[in-house]
Length: 144
Image (cartoon, rainbow, N blue to C red; front, side, top):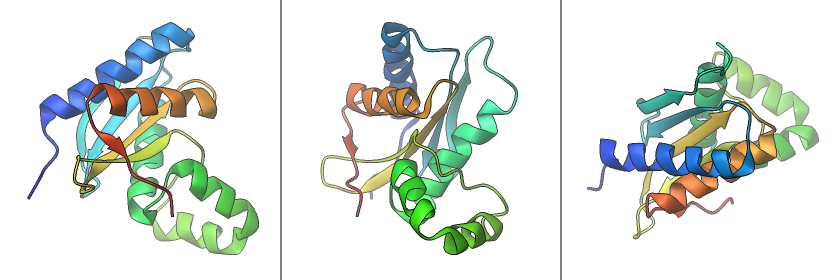
């Protein structure tokens, strides 16, 4: 059984922050969770606001819990608001339905975890998440 390693989580963070530097993003927080939704690694850049770790974790945690990116969750939330209002309650407020949370897999398609990023616009957070996954040599899980 394949498990997320600290080296992989660290590579995701490094790749995400390299992309953030290229894009000249505001200070980011990057949270990498394992397949059980537990924090494997978290990095909060200097100047990243104090709520950013919870937001980054919420993007990743919600993605894992629903089996789709936080962008997709947000799109579906606009169409099915009562369900997603209940989802936030059922997750004790931990699910964040804004782009920046992405599930990743190994080469065989086994889900290893998710990365969540917060600090800039949601689109830029997501771009950094995708870059981090690629830098670690992992794959983005397809959205259903």
